[in-house]
Length: 152
Image (cartoon, rainbow, N blue to C red; front, side):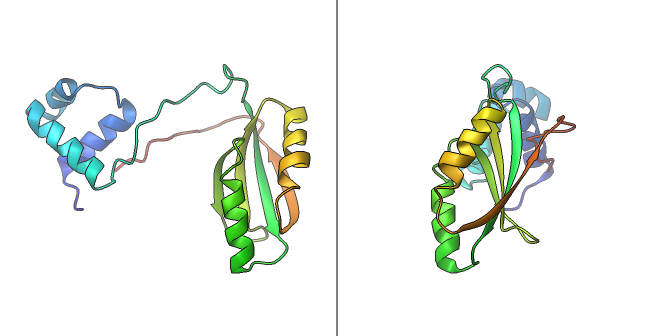
């Protein structure tokens, strides 16, 4: 799908606040409410806009301890990769999982309450996964930038 300048503005406005009404958006874009509605529906249909979510304050829900867990598989075979990726999908503590190049095969972004809860996660969940060779954990000291918006 080719995005024109108006589509790009609309996407950026929605990323800033997806609860804006089509009326509010129409005023910002100088378009009719119907035109804005149709553009949004097209962006959703084409999966440019995949879903709408609420961003939660991690402190207020007791999930502010952020850990980057590096995982190395025993062997990088199709079976091991597939098995690991299916299993990691089930771990609620893992908010993101990236298959990466370099010394490790995966990086998991893990949110838990504290160090004790992370230890429980490692001992009972990560070590239960098949084909894991080694892990390395890095603990976030401070969040310098955490942005969900992709400027288009």
